[in-house]
Length: 493
Ligand code: NAP
Image 1 (cartoon, rainbow, N blue to C red):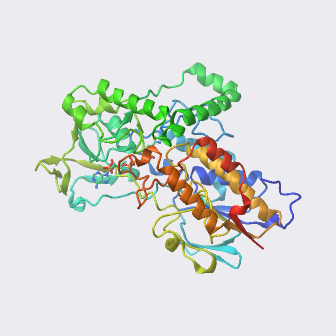
Image 2: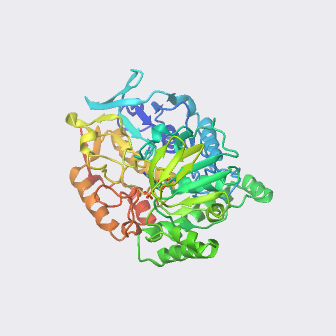
Image 3: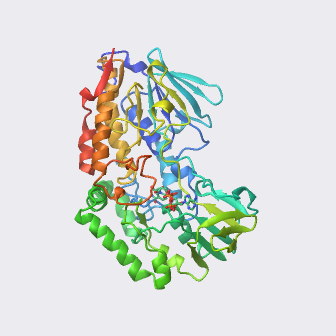
């Protein structure tokens, strides 16, 4: 992004609203400040920053992207204790970075934006408390998986024990020595199972669909390695770029080509993990998915199979009929008596900025534009919604790359769009309908050869069964993010 000096308008007066103080919102604030664009407020609905890492505090939470890759490229962290950091450490990292860059004091906490309307060439914002703001640009950094999906299971409200969604963990509920049930077998449930099995008297995992598990160790960094990271920050930068390349080659590029050798390696590894590490043939078959590995979001776990084979653990595959006051009734007629029931049932992945009432040019409502499904050019810009840009927006690489790298590349792209306005080349900028439709058609076509369309149900799929994700390689993403194609944009004024 250009420096403030030398631009063609009274650019110093450009005002920004950043929605969300998670990883992408903090990044946006730092980058705006670096560019001399300091007139911004971050609106955060909660009382604390951190986004996903603030909301998800379940036992065993960690990130399955290596910590030295799941860090801002400009803020390496010598103190990561493990190759895959636990959630609390990641939360502390974001808090530390925000503090260091003076971002915290720019956050308006606990006041959710309810309405954004584009009138008179600017965005008029309203919050729940009635606060108003008028800005030139909105950066929507709202995250993807932040609206818990609650299952429609009869009787949930009649359960007499403790019941909560995994992203609303009730830390006041005792777990030690108790009977705990977990609904779901996604990345979240798997981490909870491994963390809880040795603490509870009985752990029952209610599986609707089996999942492939990618093995992997999570070693702690030794004192010597930590000392080297502290002494030589360049080592961490090199590690970041090495991990980025490795992640792209071994995973990101494999999953977008269902017939690639990389995909075969992933499948063989998952199959061998199941064959070699689950002893009881009956349990092994219950745990064997009927679809290809990585069709659903691939799960990484060093110890799930070990945990589910412990004597106090049970994999329940008979469907849930209803929840009763004392527990869960399954199709075989059995009542599974429980003290605690955790719903690790995922999120509504199509929400993004919603439920904010976003109103673009000519009174067009985002809710209407996105009624069938969310769509955006390059996952960043929506036709008719000028000067509003999204980080980790719809159809982006949510499941295949490190979301921090994604957000950094996206912000650098958005910064170039902002620069057009800042330099006085136009006042309003948004993707054209034609470019957005073309992009989405190409994306949908390319998605057909990804692993995500090979026959499973997952949160990647939209209402048509088309993966709502980036179906190309990481290199392609990097190339496309390097510079916006201006012919894809409508520049007004
Ligand atoms: P998820 O992957 O969407 O899994 C939800 C689980 O709940 C599925 O097993 C689903 O079964 C089950 N379920 C939903 N409704 C149900 C019902 N009515 N009855 C029975 N089972 C039901 O959710 P998640 O595990 O929270 O993970 C969401 C995403 O968050 C992940 O895919 C990943 O991208 C991210 N995540 C990342 C990490 C990390 O380490 N980076 C950790 C946790 C989560 P079906 O499979 O049959 O639909």
